[in-house]
Image: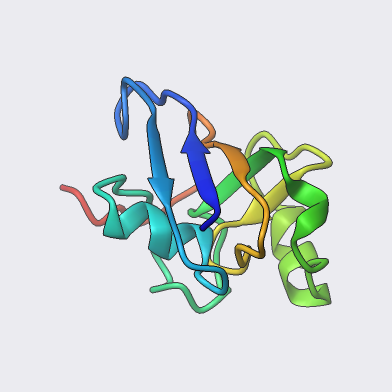
Amino acid sequence: MPKIVFLPHAELCPDGKVVEVEPGVSVCDAALQNGVEIEHACEKSCACTTCHVIVREGFDSMEDPDELEEDLLDKAWGLEPESRLSCQAIVDGEDLVVEIPKYTINQVSEKH
């Protein structure tokens, strides 16, 4: 089973986290199911950029982003060539190393 290594993030997982996931699961769902409360303001419908992540290793193992995801990523804070919306990044058979950016662009945060 593939693993996702979530690199340390000061608020969401200060020590980082390694989780095993079934292929076909989104990076966002894998995070949420394992206690990494990544923001997802549009409820994972590919309508915002709050779940933006950077896939440091294993990026090429995933399917390419579609045009809608690419258009949204252009608006994400800290965009890099290996950026994905975690709600759209589906785990294949390879391990991933994922960084959650320090900031997100979220007009209405779920946590008040």
